[in-house]
Length: 340
Image 1 (cartoon, rainbow, N blue to C red):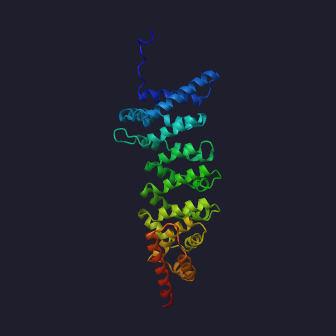
Image 2 (tube, one colour):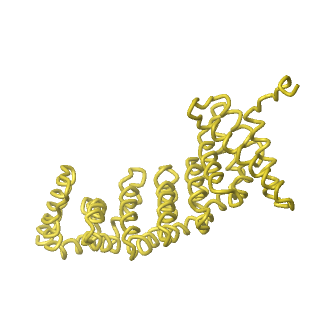
Image 3 (cartoon, helix red, strand yellow):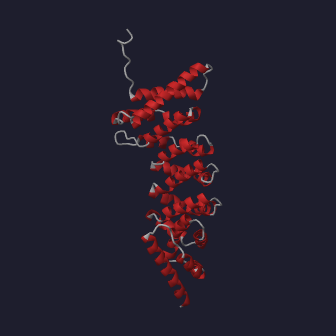
C-alpha cells in the first residue's frame, strides 16, 4: 500500500523552509539526545546538498532559472542567511563548504531583475561585521572570507565595509602567519579597493591621510616579502585606475612616497622591482612635480640611470621597454633643467 501514495516532491521553497527550521534547531543546541541530534544534522546536510544542486545543477542537469528564483526568494524572505552564518561553526567541514557555495551563488541570483541579496544585506549590515571578524578564527576564516568577497559584489555592501572600523583590520589580516588566511584576506582587500570605482575613489579621497600612512608603513615597508609584493602590485592597480586620478596626483607629489618607491626599486625580487617601476614612472611622468620631488630625482639621477640600464627581465616586454626609455629621458632632462 505504501507505494500507492507517493510523497509530493518538495519545491525549492520547501527545502529552504525545512533548512531554516533545522538551522533554528542547531542554533538552539538544546537537544539532549545524541541520536536525535545526529538525525537532524544529517537531514540538514542533505538539505544543503539539495539547495546547492538546485543552484549549481549536477552531473545530469543544468540549474533551472525558475527553481533558482524560488529558492532565492524564500532564502531572503526571512533570516536564513543570518542562521547560516551563525550556525556555520557547528557544521561539519563538507557542509560548511556547501553552505559557503550556496551563499556565494545567491549573491548573483536575480528575482524579477533584482539582486534581492543586496536588499537583504542593506537591511542587515551587522552580518558583514561577523564575516570580516571571521578572519580572527582560523577554522572559519576561509569560509567567511569567501562569503564576504561575494557579498561585496554589491556596491552598497562594499561601501559599508570600507566606511566601517573593520577596514583597518585588513592591514593586520593580510600579514597573519597562516599563509592561506593571509592570502584570502589580501584577495578580499583587493576586491574592496578595485571593484566599485566611484565608491573606492570617494573612500580614498576622504580617508587619504590615515589610509596611505598605514599602507606605506604596514604593507609597502613590511618585513614580509609576500606582503610587499602584493601591496606594490595593488598600489599600482589603484593609482593607475582613471577613477583615482586625483588620489594618484596627490600620492606622487609626496617625497616620502617617492623614497619608499625608490627603495622598492632596489629590491632583489624582479617582480617587486617591476611593480615598483610601474608606480615610480607616475612620479616621473607628473608634469607638475613639486620642487622637492625634482630635487630627489636629480640628486639620485646617476644611481637611477645605472639601475635602469641593468633593468632586464626574463620576458621581453615592448611596453615596459618603451616606458623605461621614457623615464630615462625624463630624468636626464631634469638634470639639464637643473643646470640652467
